[in-house]
Image (tube, helix red, strand yellow):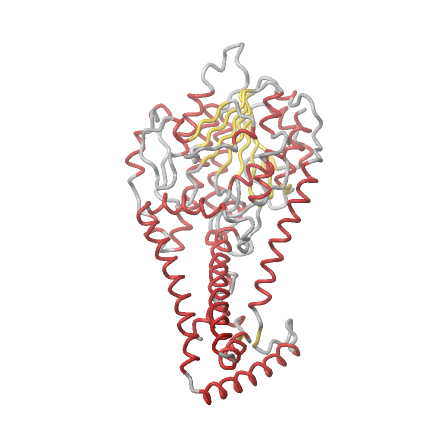
Length: 519
């Protein structure tokens, strides 16, 4: 019964794990004891199997809730979240190694099966009681159940909690309601797909002849700029970038966007920004990529730009690329990196940007060359945030073998993640590196280019704490001040540091606002 008690009182919200004041006695314990003591052998055997299955399922779902709560700050949704099992495996195996990851997964499954077996075995103890002991057990548990039900009904759940609860039924009902709401949400999404505020035709006349480079910065969230633990370092970096850009003749506007995801699943943010749809679940993303809704990339392509994607995190087939209408896709293997990976991170951001210049922007002065619209995903600031690369001279980058010593430096993830303070220090160091690299890159290669830099989402709660917003910074950088004046209506801040009162727009609003500003 002790194990059953733990499963029933285990909170789904990871923030409540250390708050014992919220734990209540579950009335299901008295109900199970009453039924197990009073039922005949045949009915008892059926009850034993059903209770074991229900409690094992509840334990699995609660553990999944804790996992998605830590990673994405929301409960696990059985209808939407099956895909993240694959992504979780890719991240885990990349961080600790395939053999170690297999061991962790197998240990977890064996532990869960062992607990389920203990459930089943412990319930069998009721059959070994004498008839008199079962009668007494049934009587006592019946009294406890009646008293508990009376307390549960009469207590004020907001103001006067009497320490009892019935959680199993509401938990499963909530999970079914969550699935039903997800199905209804897809029906609403179908209606959203039919409504596009962007008119058909050619766009971006104000950007004619310019390269447009859209860069997603992994886990670059508002907390990096405003959380007191990180803000001094990042403000210094952004100020340094601003001076470097100004010396190169570049200027910036900065503001905030609200991301559709948090902690991971970056592709949801990418899909939201590029489609102008609020894509906050895998189901919405899967439907989006089968729709005819034109992405921002495809609108540029139709308007005369060559579109390309630079995706160092893509190591497998990527059929979703067809939706975005790229003329070329450079995944990890196509970027020519010969150096060693930085744990899960396949290559440092400096190499990614150098490869983009080599593959897509050589010969920029040729009169018959099409302007390029590129989408680039930088991943050096992706967990596990070790080791941290360092910036080198751009002429030394070559095929990336020069980064081997950096890739073998620093502590492994198992050491870093044993200390939450160390994890936070590594996180902000990775953001600092990426911003430094981008400042150097734009100052060097920013001629006749509009850069759009933004975070894809906030990092996990171990970095931000509970209750952090979903906002991410965006910086728009160019050497043409006339283009930045097109953004006056956004009321965004001049320079690289957005202020607290700088307007915040949802990420799905960007596509429309951008087209309206540069048409």
